[in-house]
Image (cartoon, rainbow, N blue to C red):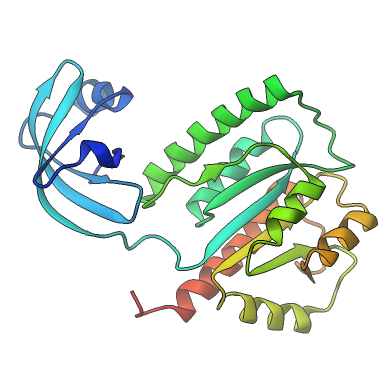
Length: 251
């Protein structure tokens, strides 16, 4: 069933309406008509099963058949602190991070980041990244649209990480897999988890130390060196599996 995010102020007791770009998508791309079934979500944890009641030039009118709690969100908030990568790698990272359950993505400037963005370019990029997050959230059936934050300095990222329950930093010079397994099994029971991922050249040792001073625990991703666009997705996959397994049956 096709799924759309709708602002809560456009959802009423028994009806709802869709406006904006989704109207054209529903009418001219999906070619849906009166009587068609769609799913909408308010981005706050509730799904609505709807029937199209009418199609107008600038809106789609819906009747709400049933509503239920969103069942696709992880019970743990995961925040990805992703160092700015080269080219358009960030688009892939955001898309896949959203699919894997990340609740927020924070682009981070690090010492070895090659990409340098001024404020104007950074905001333009952020808007583009946010639209990618929304599209990925729709495709993967998310109950929220994860936020792509403003580009942050490494120090600011560390300050944000301190507000979370747990934080980890995969580091190629850390190779204790047994301690990594213990760390991973413990942090998934928390309410929020931050993940630091470095740029193509990796973190400088001083940055790793700064993150650890802010409470981040080092973990290993194995014996291979992973690309920046692979590392975050690898750790997110592990966390998603562990969280889903531990919380199975509780929803």
